[in-house]
Amino acid sequence: MPIEKIDIDEFLAFAQTNIVLDVRSPGEYNHAHIPNAISFPLFSDEERKVVGTAYKQQSREEAIKIGLDFFGIKMRKMVEEVEKLLVLSSELEANQKLKTQNSKTVLIHCWRGGMRSAGVAWLLDLYGFKVYTLIGGYKVFRTWALEQFEKKYSLKILGGYTGSGKTYVLQELKNADTIIDLEGLANHKGSAFGNIGMPKQPSQEQFENKLALELKLAHQIQKPIWLEDESQRIGEVNIPISFWKQMRQSSLFFLDIPFEERLKHIVQEYGSLDKERMLNAIDRIKKRLGPLETKEASAALVEDRIADCFRILLTYYDKWYFKAMHNRDELNTLLKKLPCETVTESNSNKLINPEQ
Image (cartoon, rainbow, N blue to C red; front, side):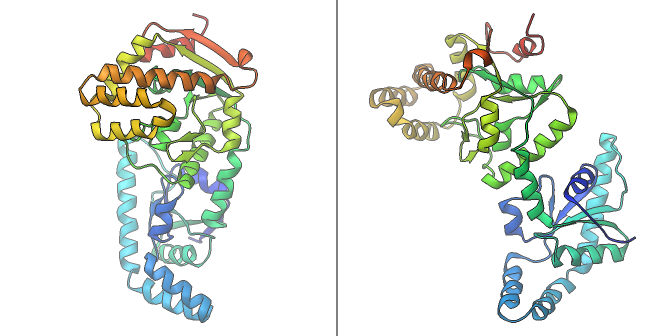
């Protein structure tokens, strides 16, 4: 079976039903990669450095010889590892009742579609796998990813003050509509307290990669995409500016929930989090919160007066959200307020059937 070189669109289409092997070094993969690709390095970080140095300081031929020394002793293990991955993939598909194009198909890419992917592709093809490689490698994928943020989408923005349960409503909407959970992609809930109890955030590049692929998959469904109203910055990552501006120009459906109801929800959601990290988060916003409010909020938290602490913080966040919301152009034509009695996933019904 000959090795086929395919472009990015075909590669991503095949990637939905076949495993993707990223043969770059672990360091390159850990920084950012194509979502759902499996790290399958031809060289370790140190080996890549040695080969690269030989290429620059000696010759291409010498670098290839050194690379073959590293590659040769790994060949059998790499073949066996791919066999295991395909078995696991087949078992997963059987459990989920999915069907792939070919149970022995693998997709491979390196940085630029050069010698690393060619070497691994040769080995796996020799053994009998059906192999596709990405023309231009990960570099082409990155260009493709950035292009997604310049496209026009049909967006619906879910708004509401802090504590409105927007994330829960968004997940409920998934049953009837297309959603993208930006905070889920960013591993951050969006406030100064948003990283507490969450996994480590992805790099900016990886966040963009994940968002780009979500946009592609959502756009294929040809339905409006629901997103939560966000600041451009979510923790340590930023929503690409062109896409964020498009969000700000889209219809805003605002869950209008009473302050006391939102306060009860916030106490329930954040009340059991690590106090030390909560105090550090309060300290990070003290310049905008104000010295008196910072002191009172911190004291209330230390004394287990959780509701008193969050009442101060919720008042602060309401003020800043109000300011950010009204900083939109033509807000009056974009904003649709939806009165809600309490914080509940069933508020999604007001979005699915806004006239009811």
